[in-house]
Image 1 (tube, rainbow, N blue to C red):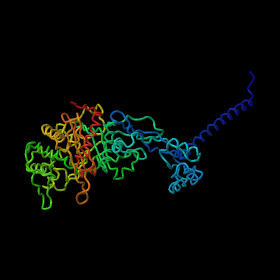
Image 2 (image 1 turned 180 degrees about the horizontal axis):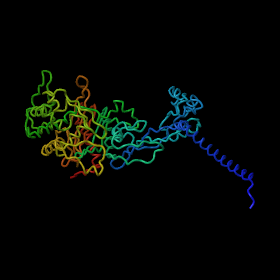
Image 3 (image 1 turned 180 degrees about the vertical axis):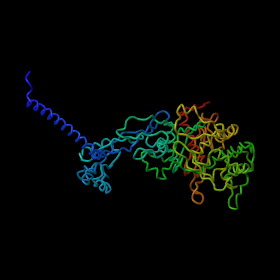
Image 4 (image 1 turned 45 degrees about the vertical axis):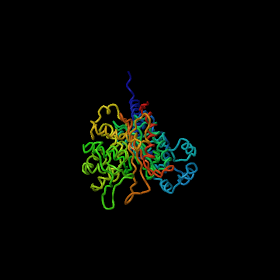
Length: 546
């Protein structure tokens, strides 16, 4: 075998070295490129922020006890701009203004002129049609982001209760705020995906609509400036309907800032007049200070000071029993009963009923009651017949339920309990005896069936309505406005086995027909009767017909 040529061997070795050298240069080039890209990572991140960082939230639906929708999320398009990519801020805004009036503002011109900014919201929650019109303009530097926006299919129905959300879809009032605090919402990073389990309320939509319709009718009929009403389960505190008129638009949070749209059921406090006599008599009965047959001499006014006396509109010419004091709604009688019990016991009893401090609900706390700073003889007498102590109507309705349900305290609630929670109910807290509760029910029924009872216009055949009227002068700075009253009616049905309490308040009702009176017996009582007639069948209460 011939020996290898040294020149040939060197040539082959040179070629191998060249091949490895080329491969090495290639890998080196790739390595350099990777390093360069790594060093350029900040620049890439900088361009990515032209897409907005989401600050919106997806929320669960709000439905009534039967699944009817009060609030839901819908996907809307929101418009934003990348100032660095705009051809001209002025021209962009001028063109946008042709399809989106009001977009061209001095503030936006200033913000968009700053090329260092990479993201500016222009308008959120656009309809699909409007988003398409803007898209068709073909303006550089503009883009859209899909966001959830709250929609309220029932409009203003239960508006105060539902509350509202802010621009980021976060709850700020009512049940919407309750969701944020106790249920939870989902941070949306991209297009909203899916939905959380709906929140069921205790509210019954048909009953809610009926309540609002009757309150609106009463406002027209009696030229009232406002009205409120609630239908509450006497045993559980579940609110089946609750309204304050004028109603609020949950889709317009700015309305809540106007006094006209105040939630007068929960956020307003008022002296409610003679419906408080129900509390006064229950207090004395439960303390065994009196019976329904105990008589008081109501012929003379109660003198509280040289210039201040308490008298009845139609003074009696003889002593009256407690039953007669209730049916005839004697202020003097109620004052004498309270004095017999004493101011200290009166205050303790009102506290036990939950009438001296704000109460918490799923839709937020009630307004704090206006309690007198001192509690002397005058306060004891005036509070006995519903003046001198101002409470939210919802708070009184809850306290009133305890007076007729056998004597157990209830807390008003708007969120339906799950089956697991329902089996773990807190033990009942007794506030009055069952005997006292039975006496109160008899008095309330008699006030509706008696020919002289102030509640007879609230009677509804078959539903055994019991109730008490209250007509109070509206408190104003330094005293009372003699030209304005709050007329109330506190009702329970059916009285033989209570299911629901109803409390109606009419603000400043005017006299109707030939009557110059504005008493609750002529307006609030018949309004409560109309409400019961409509909602009772909706709530499954079967009438007892002869």
